[in-house]
Image (cartoon, rainbow, N blue to C red; front, side, top):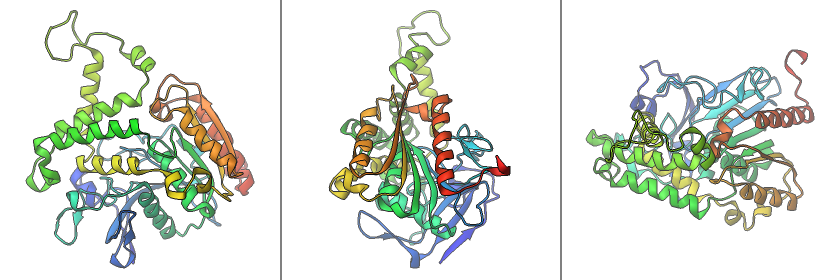
Length: 397
């Protein structure tokens, strides 16, 4: 039986948020164990989520937003750990392209995460200790399967739209392939239908950095009262480089020195880019669990729709979903060629698809930033899809 857990009123703390999140949360008992691609099931388990806007009478206006690798359910509200605004508050909110005056927006923490949905830092009910590496490895399809259970719990049969960038875009594609009858429109941004060998390589560097930290303790660091912060920080630093373009790095930092007039001929942060990456690494460890980083990166690595369905067009065969696929010119982590492969497969499956390559020098992270062409494209697509679905504008707009 699924049980809605009251929002926690405890002082926000990463360890509290793992099991008792500040957001909404649904607990599923052993009788609703979640089947996993790796074999076996996970149960009991829970999923943490946030909602924005109001579900209309016929439940036709629900939009599921899927977060990226280190994102969370706080897409358009303050993160209780960092105190920062929602990670996509530029896109989601009143009057925004995904308008919460018009749509009921759902965003959940992914399976394997660390902000309330069951993950390696969650308490294993059988032992009373954190799962650590005893938690089964999960996949993107497992994450989507968990989200589908949440959507069922909310009494929603068909989602008006599923949207997300990067790993969120992978989830969008998985939703469209696994539950085509439940997705009216899909917006995968800066994503691909499988993880490239280069991307797997970058993830492996990050995982090895974490596991090389003595405080990782074979994944059992929480029970031992330590944290592999140095390894996790290095993992974040390496990943963050891939989110930016060479041009954006040059424009923002160049070879500028950090708070000094000359080189020190040592190994302090002489350059601004070094200081920036160190800051990114150290602030990241305050809000993310190291084992979750292992699990979620591995889920991305395993993602391969063509392998799952036999070919990429077969993944979308007979799809009635409307698609808006988007890429960015300077994104070398998920280059435009990855999006074009998806578009080609959708065309082969005779799907309704539009494609936009947005001019931007911001790299992969462009989908999180103020990029007017992205906003206007999504606003236009969503407006057209809403008209096709028969969703009226708020207040007669």
